[in-house]
Image (cartoon, rainbow, N blue to C red; front, side, top):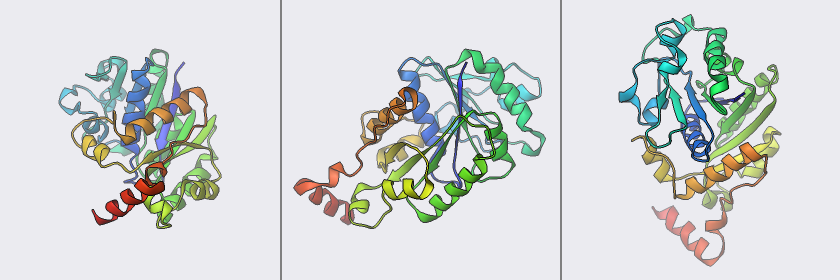
Length: 263
């Protein structure tokens, strides 16, 4: 039976899809069978991030409307054999899709995977509820900005009405240099504000931003290490947290901080 985890946030632009893609890839690289589900009907960002948009023959709407079976719509990642993507529709009236229909598709794949990661639409409208309805766990992605923290808090209050086994947060795009200089919220401040378990931290990394536009995934870079720790926390239940300020402490760290401010 798969762990069905919805990856959500209170607002767009916080990196949900990038988190979903890289977390899924890292889990699959460890040998787990992973399915990435794009339920943001009409926007289909996940297939672009994963670099499989030209391989899509069917999508989740084709499955819902009976034109193919769920397994036929899955696209296997060309890098990792145990990683599959269920693409969203390019254009469709999302109002015709119910939470029950999404859940039927996900449940039909349950026995084939260890993890099903559900990429949720931004906001807290109907698309959000369709995605959460199918999950038994939730990860809320938040960035170190007041507006994102407030929106994440709103999402957590809504999720309290769902029967979820676990809820946790991922802090994305945090900059250690700005935290140390007092110009950005720290991870500790965000956790205190949201009163929710911290699953992991992903630092700001230009490499992963560039890779996500061409179907690339984090590997040996800074974010790659952070995703490895995140994956271990999710699967093993550990509480290790990536040290996002380490590079900016000490003599050489001060040099890096000053250099980064000038770039």
